[in-house]
Length: 284
Image 1 (cartoon, rainbow, N blue to C red):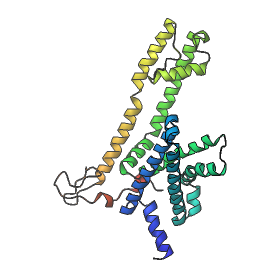
Image 2: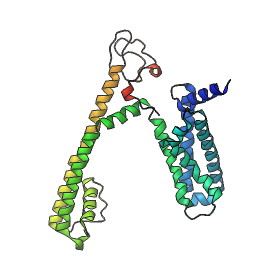
Image 3: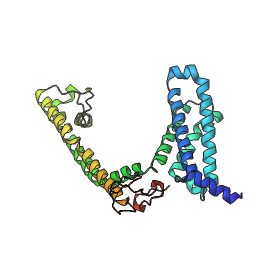
Image 4: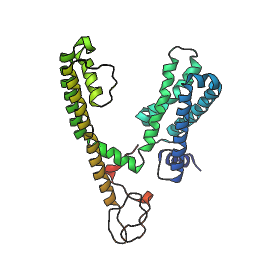
Protein backbone atom coordinates (compact mmCIF):
# COMPACT_ATOMS: atom_id res chain seq x y z
CA UNK A 1 0.00 0.00 0.00
CA UNK A 2 1.52 3.36 -1.08
CA UNK A 3 1.92 6.47 1.04
CA UNK A 4 -0.99 8.24 -0.66
CA UNK A 5 -3.23 5.20 -0.13
CA UNK A 6 -2.32 5.12 3.56
CA UNK A 7 -3.10 8.83 3.92
CA UNK A 8 -6.43 8.41 2.15
CA UNK A 9 -7.35 5.42 4.29
CA UNK A 10 -6.44 7.27 7.50
CA UNK A 11 -8.31 10.37 6.34
CA UNK A 12 -11.49 8.36 5.75
CA UNK A 13 -11.24 6.79 9.22
CA UNK A 14 -10.22 9.88 11.21
CA UNK A 15 -12.19 12.62 9.47
CA UNK A 16 -15.01 10.48 8.04
CA UNK A 17 -18.14 9.46 9.91
CA UNK A 18 -20.05 7.26 7.46
CA UNK A 19 -17.77 4.22 7.35
CA UNK A 20 -17.60 1.53 10.01
CA UNK A 21 -13.99 2.43 10.72
CA UNK A 22 -14.89 6.10 11.08
CA UNK A 23 -17.78 5.38 13.43
CA UNK A 24 -15.61 3.07 15.53
CA UNK A 25 -12.86 5.68 15.68
CA UNK A 26 -15.30 8.39 16.78
CA UNK A 27 -16.77 6.09 19.43
CA UNK A 28 -13.32 5.25 20.82
CA UNK A 29 -12.38 8.93 20.74
CA UNK A 30 -15.51 9.95 22.65
CA UNK A 31 -14.83 7.30 25.31
CA UNK A 32 -11.20 8.43 25.61
CA UNK A 33 -12.14 12.10 25.92
CA UNK A 34 -14.78 11.39 28.57
CA UNK A 35 -12.34 9.18 30.47
CA UNK A 36 -9.67 11.89 30.41
CA UNK A 37 -12.21 14.42 31.68
CA UNK A 38 -13.15 12.02 34.47
CA UNK A 39 -9.48 11.81 35.47
CA UNK A 40 -9.30 15.61 35.44
CA UNK A 41 -12.40 15.86 37.64
CA UNK A 42 -11.06 13.30 40.11
CA UNK A 43 -7.71 15.08 40.20
CA UNK A 44 -9.45 18.32 41.20
CA UNK A 45 -10.85 16.64 44.34
CA UNK A 46 -8.21 17.11 47.10
CA UNK A 47 -8.83 13.77 48.83
CA UNK A 48 -8.75 11.85 45.56
CA UNK A 49 -5.62 13.63 44.42
CA UNK A 50 -3.81 12.83 47.68
CA UNK A 51 -4.81 9.15 47.64
CA UNK A 52 -4.42 8.46 43.91
CA UNK A 53 -2.06 11.20 42.75
CA UNK A 54 0.45 8.90 41.05
CA UNK A 55 -2.19 6.73 39.34
CA UNK A 56 -4.13 9.76 38.09
CA UNK A 57 -0.95 11.35 36.79
CA UNK A 58 0.03 8.18 34.90
CA UNK A 59 -3.43 8.05 33.36
CA UNK A 60 -3.04 11.67 32.31
CA UNK A 61 0.27 10.82 30.61
CA UNK A 62 -1.41 7.94 28.75
CA UNK A 63 -4.27 10.13 27.56
CA UNK A 64 -1.86 12.87 26.50
CA UNK A 65 0.15 10.34 24.47
CA UNK A 66 -3.04 9.12 22.76
CA UNK A 67 -4.24 12.63 21.96
CA UNK A 68 -0.78 13.58 20.70
CA UNK A 69 -0.73 10.58 18.37
CA UNK A 70 -4.21 11.46 17.13
CA UNK A 71 -3.20 15.11 16.57
CA UNK A 72 -0.13 14.10 14.59
CA UNK A 73 -2.15 11.62 12.53
CA UNK A 74 -4.65 14.34 11.67
CA UNK A 75 -1.82 16.57 10.51
CA UNK A 76 -0.32 13.70 8.53
CA UNK A 77 -3.41 12.63 6.62
CA UNK A 78 -5.10 16.02 6.24
CA UNK A 79 -4.97 17.40 2.66
CA UNK A 80 -4.21 20.82 4.18
CA UNK A 81 -2.32 20.30 7.46
CA UNK A 82 -1.82 24.01 8.17
CA UNK A 83 -5.50 24.73 7.60
CA UNK A 84 -6.40 22.06 10.12
CA UNK A 85 -3.77 23.30 12.62
CA UNK A 86 -5.16 26.86 12.39
CA UNK A 87 -8.80 25.79 12.58
CA UNK A 88 -10.80 26.12 15.79
CA UNK A 89 -10.74 22.40 16.60
CA UNK A 90 -7.10 22.13 15.55
CA UNK A 91 -6.19 24.79 18.10
CA UNK A 92 -8.37 23.03 20.69
CA UNK A 93 -6.55 19.75 20.00
CA UNK A 94 -3.20 21.45 20.51
CA UNK A 95 -4.21 23.33 23.67
CA UNK A 96 -5.59 20.12 25.18
CA UNK A 97 -2.20 18.40 25.08
CA UNK A 98 0.09 21.35 25.83
CA UNK A 99 -0.36 21.50 29.64
CA UNK A 100 1.21 18.09 30.26
CA UNK A 101 4.26 18.94 28.15
CA UNK A 102 4.57 22.35 29.81
CA UNK A 103 4.58 20.64 33.20
CA UNK A 104 7.67 18.69 32.06
CA UNK A 105 9.45 21.79 30.76
CA UNK A 106 8.52 24.14 33.62
CA UNK A 107 7.91 22.08 36.77
CA UNK A 108 6.66 23.89 39.84
CA UNK A 109 5.50 27.05 38.09
CA UNK A 110 2.82 28.80 40.14
CA UNK A 111 0.42 29.33 37.23
CA UNK A 112 0.69 25.75 35.97
CA UNK A 113 -2.61 24.90 37.66
CA UNK A 114 -4.35 27.46 35.46
CA UNK A 115 -2.62 26.16 32.33
CA UNK A 116 -3.71 22.62 33.13
CA UNK A 117 -7.34 23.78 33.06
CA UNK A 118 -6.95 23.97 29.27
CA UNK A 119 -7.47 20.21 29.33
CA UNK A 120 -11.14 20.93 29.94
CA UNK A 121 -11.23 22.17 26.35
CA UNK A 122 -11.25 18.54 25.25
CA UNK A 123 -14.98 18.65 25.84
CA UNK A 124 -15.22 20.71 22.64
CA UNK A 125 -14.02 17.60 20.82
CA UNK A 126 -17.24 15.92 21.92
CA UNK A 127 -19.21 18.77 20.37
CA UNK A 128 -17.27 18.32 17.12
CA UNK A 129 -18.21 14.64 17.03
CA UNK A 130 -21.78 15.06 18.21
CA UNK A 131 -22.59 17.53 15.46
CA UNK A 132 -22.40 14.71 12.92
CA UNK A 133 -25.41 13.02 14.45
CA UNK A 134 -28.49 13.80 12.41
CA UNK A 135 -30.66 14.61 15.42
CA UNK A 136 -28.13 17.12 16.70
CA UNK A 137 -28.05 18.70 13.23
CA UNK A 138 -31.82 19.14 13.41
CA UNK A 139 -31.55 20.79 16.83
CA UNK A 140 -28.72 23.03 15.67
CA UNK A 141 -30.63 24.17 12.61
CA UNK A 142 -33.73 24.80 14.74
CA UNK A 143 -31.70 27.06 17.02
CA UNK A 144 -30.27 28.90 14.03
CA UNK A 145 -33.73 29.39 12.52
CA UNK A 146 -35.04 30.76 15.83
CA UNK A 147 -32.07 33.04 16.52
CA UNK A 148 -33.86 36.26 15.54
CA UNK A 149 -36.88 35.51 17.72
CA UNK A 150 -34.62 34.52 20.61
CA UNK A 151 -32.62 37.73 20.14
CA UNK A 152 -35.82 39.80 20.28
CA UNK A 153 -36.93 37.92 23.39
CA UNK A 154 -33.53 38.41 25.02
CA UNK A 155 -33.61 42.13 24.21
CA UNK A 156 -37.09 42.46 25.72
CA UNK A 157 -36.05 40.67 28.90
CA UNK A 158 -32.94 42.87 29.12
CA UNK A 159 -35.13 45.98 28.97
CA UNK A 160 -37.49 44.57 31.63
CA UNK A 161 -34.74 43.69 34.09
CA UNK A 162 -33.24 47.17 33.60
CA UNK A 163 -36.60 48.79 34.34
CA UNK A 164 -37.31 46.63 37.41
CA UNK A 165 -33.73 47.02 38.61
CA UNK A 166 -33.95 50.81 38.42
CA UNK A 167 -37.33 50.76 40.18
CA UNK A 168 -36.12 48.59 43.05
CA UNK A 169 -32.99 50.75 43.39
CA UNK A 170 -35.10 53.88 43.78
CA UNK A 171 -37.54 52.18 46.17
CA UNK A 172 -35.12 50.25 48.41
CA UNK A 173 -31.86 52.18 48.17
CA UNK A 174 -28.37 51.31 49.45
CA UNK A 175 -29.55 50.83 53.04
CA UNK A 176 -31.32 47.60 52.03
CA UNK A 177 -28.44 46.20 49.98
CA UNK A 178 -29.30 47.74 46.59
CA UNK A 179 -26.11 49.77 46.43
CA UNK A 180 -26.20 50.52 42.70
CA UNK A 181 -28.32 50.06 39.61
CA UNK A 182 -26.11 47.17 38.30
CA UNK A 183 -26.62 45.39 41.65
CA UNK A 184 -30.36 45.98 41.36
CA UNK A 185 -30.35 44.68 37.78
CA UNK A 186 -28.53 41.56 39.03
CA UNK A 187 -31.34 41.12 41.59
CA UNK A 188 -33.95 41.56 38.83
CA UNK A 189 -32.26 38.92 36.66
CA UNK A 190 -32.09 36.45 39.55
CA UNK A 191 -35.73 37.12 40.39
CA UNK A 192 -37.19 37.09 36.89
CA UNK A 193 -35.44 33.80 36.10
CA UNK A 194 -36.98 32.32 39.30
CA UNK A 195 -33.52 31.43 40.68
CA UNK A 196 -33.89 33.47 43.86
CA UNK A 197 -30.49 33.45 45.58
CA UNK A 198 -31.82 35.56 48.44
CA UNK A 199 -28.59 37.53 48.91
CA UNK A 200 -30.42 40.80 48.18
CA UNK A 201 -34.04 41.03 49.39
CA UNK A 202 -36.50 43.96 49.31
CA UNK A 203 -37.53 45.14 52.78
CA UNK A 204 -40.21 47.75 52.13
CA UNK A 205 -43.82 46.86 51.23
CA UNK A 206 -43.57 48.69 47.91
CA UNK A 207 -40.32 46.89 47.09
CA UNK A 208 -41.88 43.55 47.94
CA UNK A 209 -44.80 44.39 45.67
CA UNK A 210 -42.38 45.10 42.82
CA UNK A 211 -40.58 41.84 43.62
CA UNK A 212 -43.86 39.92 43.50
CA UNK A 213 -44.69 41.43 40.12
CA UNK A 214 -41.19 40.52 38.88
CA UNK A 215 -41.62 36.91 40.04
CA UNK A 216 -45.01 36.56 38.37
CA UNK A 217 -43.65 38.09 35.19
CA UNK A 218 -40.79 35.61 35.30
CA UNK A 219 -43.20 32.67 35.36
CA UNK A 220 -45.12 34.26 32.49
CA UNK A 221 -42.19 34.71 30.13
CA UNK A 222 -39.95 31.78 31.04
CA UNK A 223 -41.83 29.50 28.62
CA UNK A 224 -41.49 31.87 25.66
CA UNK A 225 -38.05 30.71 24.40
CA UNK A 226 -39.07 27.10 24.96
CA UNK A 227 -42.10 27.60 22.74
CA UNK A 228 -40.03 29.33 20.06
CA UNK A 229 -37.42 26.57 19.92
CA UNK A 230 -40.06 23.84 20.10
CA UNK A 231 -41.95 25.33 17.14
CA UNK A 232 -38.80 25.55 15.02
CA UNK A 233 -37.73 22.05 16.08
CA UNK A 234 -41.11 20.61 15.14
CA UNK A 235 -40.99 22.35 11.75
CA UNK A 236 -37.48 21.04 11.06
CA UNK A 237 -38.41 17.50 12.10
CA UNK A 238 -41.44 17.58 9.81
CA UNK A 239 -39.19 18.72 6.98
CA UNK A 240 -36.85 15.78 7.57
CA UNK A 241 -39.78 13.35 7.76
CA UNK A 242 -40.95 14.49 4.34
CA UNK A 243 -37.52 13.67 2.92
CA UNK A 244 -37.86 9.97 3.77
CA UNK A 245 -40.17 8.53 1.09
CA UNK A 246 -41.18 4.94 0.61
CA UNK A 247 -39.84 3.46 -2.66
CA UNK A 248 -43.00 1.35 -2.95
CA UNK A 249 -45.91 3.69 -2.21
CA UNK A 250 -43.98 7.00 -2.52
CA UNK A 251 -45.54 8.32 0.69
CA UNK A 252 -43.45 10.43 3.07
CA UNK A 253 -43.71 11.34 6.75
CA UNK A 254 -41.30 8.76 8.19
CA UNK A 255 -38.80 9.26 10.99
CA UNK A 256 -35.20 9.70 9.90
CA UNK A 257 -34.19 6.34 11.42
CA UNK A 258 -37.25 4.37 10.25
CA UNK A 259 -36.52 1.07 8.51
CA UNK A 260 -40.01 0.23 7.22
CA UNK A 261 -42.83 2.24 5.71
CA UNK A 262 -45.60 2.99 8.18
CA UNK A 263 -48.16 2.98 5.35
CA UNK A 264 -47.42 -0.21 3.38
CA UNK A 265 -44.72 -1.93 5.45
CA UNK A 266 -42.12 -1.94 2.68
CA UNK A 267 -38.47 -1.60 3.57
CA UNK A 268 -37.09 1.90 3.34
CA UNK A 269 -33.63 2.91 2.23
CA UNK A 270 -30.71 2.34 4.61
CA UNK A 271 -30.51 5.40 6.91
CA UNK A 272 -26.75 5.63 6.33
CA UNK A 273 -27.30 5.83 2.56
CA UNK A 274 -30.04 8.45 2.55
CA UNK A 275 -29.26 11.75 0.98
CA UNK A 276 -29.44 14.69 3.35
CA UNK A 277 -29.87 18.17 1.82
CA UNK A 278 -26.75 20.32 1.81
CA UNK A 279 -28.55 22.97 3.86
CA UNK A 280 -28.80 20.63 6.82
CA UNK A 281 -25.24 19.27 6.66
CA UNK A 282 -22.40 20.65 8.72
CA UNK A 283 -19.00 19.76 7.38
CA UNK A 284 -15.67 19.91 9.18
